[in-house]
Image 1 (tube, rainbow, N blue to C red):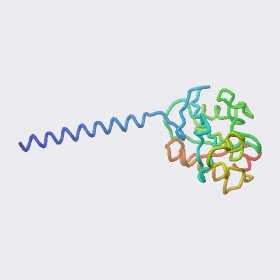
Image 2: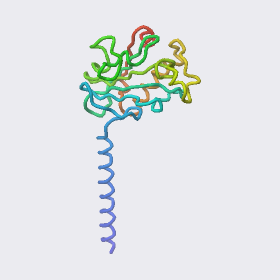
Image 3: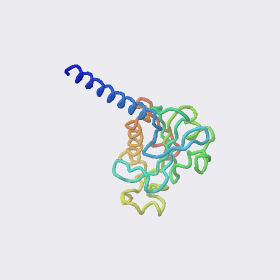
Image 4: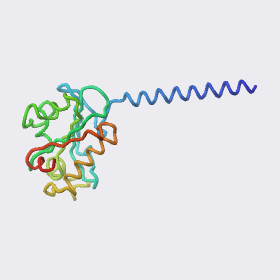
Length: 192
């Protein structure tokens, strides 16, 4: 009797470990979804946009930011990550290649797609008070925009938002904590 119980216990434990290993393997193989955003393959990369005003990313003080992430074509991360910051009065589209639903990059070799094709995760977002980050009238209707105005690239607000976004992707296993960078033009260049 005793041997039968031990054999049964070993069989149950082995089955449980096998299920746990299969679950862990499936989780590791799951496609990344930065900020919970689904990714679509396009232009040789994966583009993970904010699909609606409700899907914006609440930053550290709950102001909703319009954030897109572009990933390399394969892999689950973590990747070296760069955040691309737009100039005053601009929005995330200035750094997004036209095939990524943006308005067109400042430079065809210096944009979200170009970096992602080289193995980087790329964050493009509209800074608070611009675009759909509480800047355009329709984007101001949801909670959180009462404090969503811009603060002239203040380290306590806009720069902290950038740090929050990068840190969130580190926490999600998408960004490498030892390989984070920022770039921008004009107002965004000052922040970077």
